[in-house]
Length: 556
Image (spheres, helix red, strand yellow):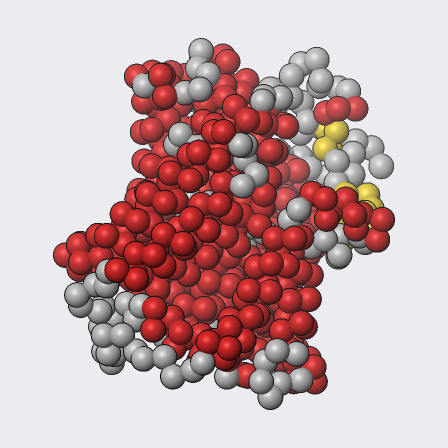
């Protein structure tokens, strides 16, 4: 089939407007539709996704001139990526949670947490912030939200707050998620030093990391009740932010999340041995519990109840190791070129340099990697199977039946996520995403402020900080060099700004609603998270501008 070259300003000659502006406004139509249907109409996620994707395909064909077979293939390619590995993670994570509920072990988990702290604020910090960061650091790609949101909902959190809190908490660790993959990709596509970018991200995100525990508490209970747990907030924020800074600056992008999470959990456990909040806080619609529930189960029973999640954390950690991936590579599924798409789309200037345009390097590859063995969802599946033998009065037969019930439970989130990834891929391969990005590059000296916004937009579109960095990393460097700003700063800002878009990405919202039983309520959750996302983005934007022009000494 004949190759097709992307066009980035198809409407540029229609009206006397700044370059890319009219085309960018039109390219945003699928996103406007998504936003309107989720935020105002509160439409079910899969319906909004179908409308947005249909609009994107239509625009790609009629305005951007993409051949119909390539447009259909690109959308299908994204949908399959949504099914694997994303949906594979969601299904297995919710399955493990459902098994703990059916076997009765989750009741022991709830009581053990209540014995440590019965306060909802501290439980959110332990699970959504610290434990979620550990899972993000080892797996990423929606895994932490799927696991922690289900846990909080099981503990008795209001489902909307369980989902929303986990989305807000899953910000600070995202840039270093999956053993540093987003930063590694940002360095790779921009041609910059990975440790330099890691250092800059580690001089931006700790400010946000320190704020997140406070942010969670204020969101849950207001400022006044937040003051009651200041010692815990200081401990969690300082442990996480301090560790994140040290490892990102002096070790690299691989361990900041994992080590920050471990130090935070350890710090909180030590604190709670010597300090407890004077008043326990629960949601207004809950029946107040005792100050500290007495643990009626033995240590062996508690350890057995937590075993599924201990095994899960260990398995996901091992699965993220480079040495393990190398070991299993010979048996790790297969990769194939995606038909009607691979190397049939050519990028051109200014997305690629004039020297690259027209060469094989400018071709947009498309290969599907069915890495079933090394996929994070497989690690979770195996941890669930191993846990069956530890759970009391449970069997492989019950586990199998639970798995199929879980698949049925998640049928609408499966459709939503697959469709959303189809939307992201058609926008990427058609050049519509690049059109949106190029419009931001026309801001001149203000570009450092908009560099994080570009990352935020990329994560909203794709649901992945890794994908956002792959999409805009090169563009961030070339634009920064054109306006006279350190390109390392803007590439890092793409990653750090992107983390704030994670909570409103339709993909993330679908995962969270699936884990908490809020299927069909995606619009409510989007509204819940939107202002938090924008506020956190502004924090990163201000930090980036200050580091670009005023606080240059902060940069390595």
